[in-house]
Image (cartoon, rainbow, N blue to C red):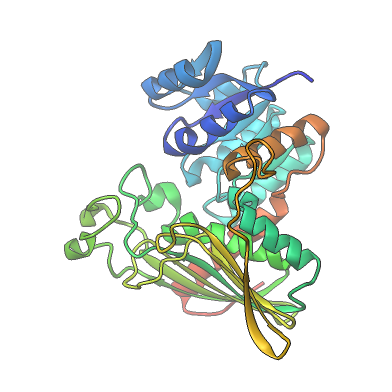
Length: 367
């Protein structure tokens, strides 16, 4: 099977940390033929390290999209530009992998979905945490109804002091928000996916701007002190989500919260037969999945065995970004659905947007 020709739009942090290594690890399925960044030097450097011989470099994404050799586009730009680029890519009949979140607003995300449906191309969003071993285990358990009726969940996206001090993370115009839209989105995606429940009834949210503007709050930050004068987004956000079947979800998201336990890209699920918790983040050296239930008149906790595998036969398949990339490229080649479906990512964006709106207008948002 021929290799897919990939073009990258945005050659900054997320491209270098996730997309380039993941595509390189799946070199049997793809080759990167075009790179675009508004900073030409970044695109040139990326092309030299990750591109094929003769890879093209652009500073205008429209020129990359006009490149007839490019079949698949990865959008790795600030949130506010996702929709514009994706809609243009679909009009040029490119398959699109867009970094999370789908967009900074519901209106723009809906434009993306409409353009995708009209194009007949493939589309997915970068929620690679679904491919972590413990998340896959929990999802399989939920599919088998081993937890019973899941009626309560918590989506955890909490850092004690982990404010990103590079790029445009604190730029509200470029990103649309802070930790809620950045890391809360991963926690919510995992929770909704495992519950297999996307029918939202209402959302209530609170958004806090407490620590970002305080110089003393920067002390101990994982990535060094941030500039309080340029911190424009929230430092914490909380949401209460009620589903149409009566189930509820608490969503917590923060880059900086005075709390001991930091759980990120994690979920807690409570069902009628059992419960489960994923522990991941600053407080944990290794990711954990713990099931809790009653058995033989005793309360029990069960964990995944720490026993290792045999080299090349462990069955894990590699780091989640590489696995995500592999299934995406195979979905494009085989014309099958990628694991992260656009409609699911759109629901995540709708909930995040509703939390911001609820906090701003001090009211419940009905769906």
